[in-house]
Amino acid sequence: MSPQNHEQVVTQAVMNRYVNVEKTKRDVLTALQHYRGLGPKLDKFVFNDGSDQELLNLDGTIPVRYKGSTYNIPICIWLLDNHPLSSPMVYVKPTPDMLIKASRHVDQNGKVYLPYLHEWNPNSSDLPGLIQIMIMTFSEMPPVYSKPKTAQPPGATPYPLPYPTNSPGYMPMPGGGPNMPYSPAQTGANTVYPPYPTQPGGYPPSTTPYPVYPPASTAGYPPSQPPTSYPPPYSAGGITYPPYPSTTSSVPTGATETSGVTGTSTTTSTGTITEEHIRASLISAVSDRVRAKLRDSYGGSQAEVSVLRQQQADLNQGKIKLEGLISKLEQEQTELDKNIRVLREKEGEIKNVLSRLSSATEPLNVDEAVTTTAPLYKQLLNAYAEDQATQDAIYYLGEALRRDVIDLDCFLKHVRSLSRKQYQLRATMIKCRAKGNMAG
Image (cartoon, rainbow, N blue to C red):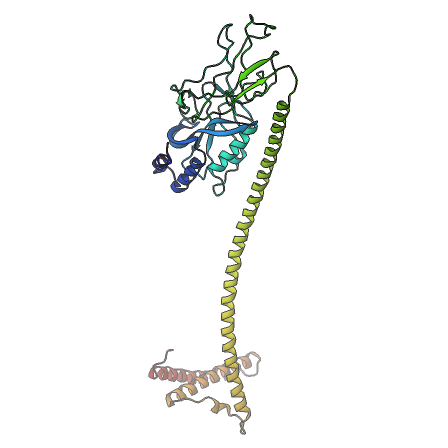
């Protein structure tokens, strides 16, 4: 499928189905651009509670290098409708002639468990990073191996036949019903394919497939076990890959000459370790050591980046708070400068008045200190002053009565007279305020 078809399929799949359409589309197209063995599909996924939903998935193979050889591992990556807020669901999809090798990263159903998925971050995690982590993990512990075949009768052809190119394999997949199809890539008629690794008990590592044991009628000792053959080779994308090495080193005695996938080599199996074996062992050991160091370095770098991003977020929040405090302080500084300027002006006015009063030769007359601009205001001022004086006189008469300075008759006589006068004064003030249109 061309990149234009990929983009069209992804656009139709995410439209009206996914919350973050642009982010999901960009993430999927970036992964498809880097890993051409994957293709977008829109299928129905069945969850554990029985509910189903149409979700976009990336179905195909990813290249995994194992002990100097490259293999295509079939996988399927399902994206939830709130991607990238939730981590994807990844499954290994073996063909009919493969079996899942359960480990701490892959269960018996093929579901993949990785720390990268467990610690999924919508801001920093993406599909290309997930696929890269899967390639590194599967290169150390392959998730699939070839299904062992039954023994062949004597006289049968010792070499396995390749997969038919026109019959796709099927496998059950969680969420896809009992038979969710998975079609391997179509291949040419003249292409030869390497087998996948077998379970423990097979042949030793080699870049070429071993033939079966010779029949009992040939020269030499008869085999102690029934003759067996490797399973049919696996292909993807029309590209030839070398076989997976086996996990044991049980080499049959006798000299054999085999023709491999990538070339022809002659090996004498006499139990002697050759330079080729030593070189392959050294390459494997160095590859494992470098891969482990890279994994540790990547994990440490990821942790440091996470800590630095958290510190950056905290520093940004502190910066916002500091900017708010600085702005508030600037406003208070402006208001304080304004108040200081007003106070200095008032202080200057007070100093001018004091200097003018100190230079006067005649003493200040308190009665003439307050003057009015009209006779009405003067009458109001005098009435108010007399009213306050009358109020003070009544107060002190009450104090004199309390201290027995005057008797009750004298107190009542003077209070009655002062109250009458106070009434007249207050009536005068009311009339003056009404005449002058003043409140009160």
